[in-house]
Length: 252
Image (cartoon, rainbow, N blue to C red):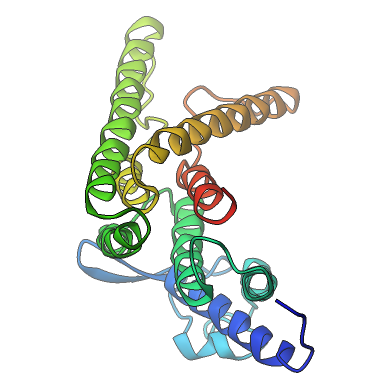
């Protein structure tokens, strides 16, 4: 697509709005059928109004301090992503479907990193999106089989994680209560399986495992160097699944 400077303000505005939507959804999310408003990082009071996200700087109504840099970083990233989507156009998805998926992935990414959880409402939404986009890209059977494959694939890793925790607790007489992966990651594996379809989900999740393993190894080495390593430190898996999914949807 030919670059048109006249389109630039409108595209950047759409990207800015997408970033705001991701920030709002990441800070106001559902758990156990209740709306959760994330705490202010400064005073731990849940007092950030939705409308505050449209005003700069975004301040806590209680302590008056501004939100962390993540808010501005997300908005900047989505302005860049929107420009990229508009002027490259994926062979698999058009601009609007691509942006919708990236907004969904952004919410999952932030919540999993900051809270180590993937809310059920996002799994349900992702399943709907996965069926819609999966069937449009891969037809019905590859989409359904891909969903089940992703679910089973991640459940196997999840089960091994729990077995590993039990084994370590028995051998070392320690208590590692938190396995490396939560069940939300298993369900999200089914979601990305619907989106990618079969057999690509096998290669996508294999790429996820390799990337997560490399990250875990580097992360462990860094913690060992700075003497902050502890057995059983967990890290989010959803971002790596997202990277694998984005690779197959937008690049391959």
